Length: 170
Image (tube, rainbow, N blue to C red):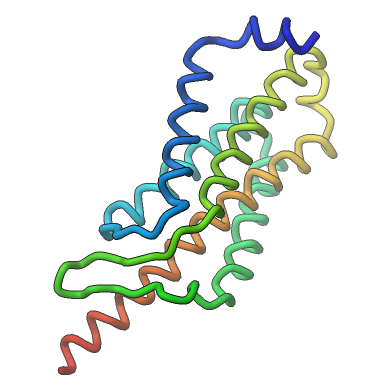
């Protein structure tokens, strides 16, 4: 059965998987990121996340509310955490210097595999789209991924605002 599922998966899905794997693997090593790049990833991955909810459950207000609730709940938790050691902002170059981490890779794979598995489940059991516990659970999972992405970006932007303010004061 697994082989049949893979054989019926559109080819572009494998390309998207490879792209996300590559993007996530690049973040395993220390890097320097622009402000734009730190904003782009949460926007793109958040878009994929909300698209996952909309494509699976249509315009279900309950699903969208579950997604939004988890975005904000997760965001609140992430914003309480400190930035990883060694993270800094170079105000002159307007770039962040961050340590390597597996978090973005895990989040990207989480969104990808959630979307893939939900797609397979819905193909076999379309009635799941109308089962409230299923739609709330999946939507909340997507919202959790988005909240972590957005929270990580906001923590970096806060660092930049402190760095810019320190540069102006000096």
